[in-house]
Image (cartoon, rainbow, N blue to C red):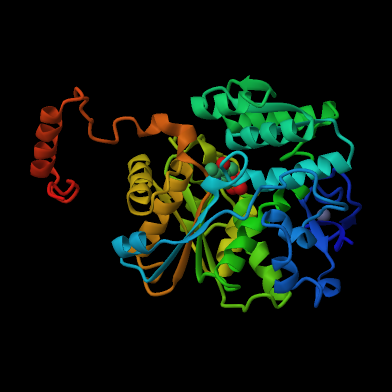
Amino acid sequence: MSYVKSLQCKECQSEYELKPLTVCDNDFGPLEVAYDYEAMKGKVTRESIEAGPRSLWRYKDLLPIEGEPKAGLNSGFTPFIKADRLAAELGVKELYIKDDSANYPSYSYKDRVVAVALTKAIEFDFDTVGCASTGNLAHSVAAHAAAAGLRACVMIPHDLEEGKIVATLSFGPRMFKIKGNYDDVNRLCSQIADKYNWAIVNVNLRPYYTEGAKTHGFEIAEQMGWRLPKHTVSPVAGGTILPKIWKAYQEFITLGIVEDNKPKIYGAQADGCNPVVTALREDQELFHPQKPNTIAKSIAIGNPADGYYVIKVIKESGGFGESASDQEILDAVKLLGRTQGIFTEPAGGTTLACAIKLIQSGRIPRDESICVCITGNGLKTVEVMQGQFAANPTINAKMSEFDELVKQMEETHPSQSPATTA
Ligand SMILES: *Cc1c(COP(=O)(O)O)cnc(C)c1O
Ligand SMILES: [Zn+2]
């Protein structure tokens, strides 16, 4: 039983059949999946969701698939952490981390969108799947395609972090490294999707792909005890996840699953690629595309496909945008590691750094609940952390040399030194 009605144009509301379509014939508006919420009432409930699998497929009734899930059976349902040590450090009362750095199988939020897109690709009978990626999407597509027995062709900018490339290649996809930035890759992929009969997940399957991102928001609400955080800080790259977290909150409100606490949502970008944040600061509805220059490569998209809707949703909610410098990003990566034991990549550092700036500027009050969305894992981007930590000397396996180091440690870092007596 599926509650999906149609694909619907976000601008003129024209309806289309559930096919691999992405834009409206009338006005080129993007198509989005529409559901029959009336039919869901009383059937899609807290209890029905709790009875589902411990994966993102527990929200299957709110996802656009016809039959059973065919990819990502272990994706989603990532940790949700009450970050008390970080909260104390920042001087806020109630702080949560939604931790998609632990997503399965490829350690980023992209496992959510790919789980849905590849299930759709199989429903539509494609045998080759692909993507235009800043790295994490290629990694996730390759992993899920390998597990589902589909051929994968992934397209990436040529200069990505080595960890993302090696991790992706281990799943055996065909990788195309393109000279240029993500926006160049994306433009090429639109042409590839027209010419080859491939399912490019974020191009010709985009309406289905993006729906998978709602599960990040559903999980936040469920794991908070069927409540919404008052303030949610989300990264913005192509602009998929932020409006979909918002859609998830609104769907739960519509279905009476959570109370409407008038949540606010905030967008985080790097200073070196902040088209949406700039538009918000200048109170514009449209953004100007930029040429990215930041260590936060996962979110370096200068011409975000859904940037317009990010701006719209943030304004509607009463939230705002913020951006962070490369050093602020690195400092936030270290802070999250030091206080909570979570190692995120620069995209996660960006989100936390921006949350901190929004708190310090008073945009986010210190006494209301805050959720920071951590979307990627630091192990794929270790090179950015080089030079960020004090050197650790190597010693011979001799007690005297060890004692000497402990003594030095006590002198230089009294708070971190181990107790010297039992
Ligand atoms: C893709 C990605 C995002 C957000 O991308 P959107 O296109 O805005 O959904 C955020 N963080 C990481 C680590 C990503 O890989
Ligand atoms: Zn239209």
